[in-house]
Image 1 (tube, helix red, strand yellow):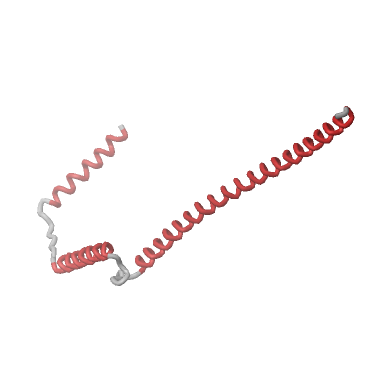
Image 2 (tube, rainbow, N blue to C red; image 1 turned 180 degrees about the vertical axis):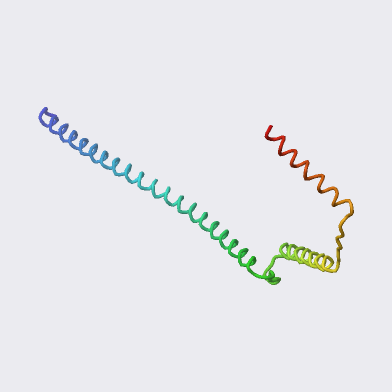
Length: 142
């Protein structure tokens, strides 16, 4: 090969490599930008998933709260036997038994009469206690 031909070939090779390097640099830059965009998108997806889970949990709690508030407003809690699970049925039965016991106790309290009569020494004791309180008040100032 002659020198000018070899020089031309080297110049062409150099130009090709410079073009390839520039192309690869641009591709690298584009890929880095794409990576950043994708990382942000993945982070957004994860945050959306977490937000949806929290939203569902909050909705369940709000629903439970509103149900309990409705139950509070009712004069007597309604019995829902068909929709309850076996564990809930046991709890409902225990609550019913407790309510029945409370009603029975209230009935007994109504039937029970208490008479209060003044005690003879009670009148004498009260005036003695009052001066002691006054004495204590006097001593606080000194």
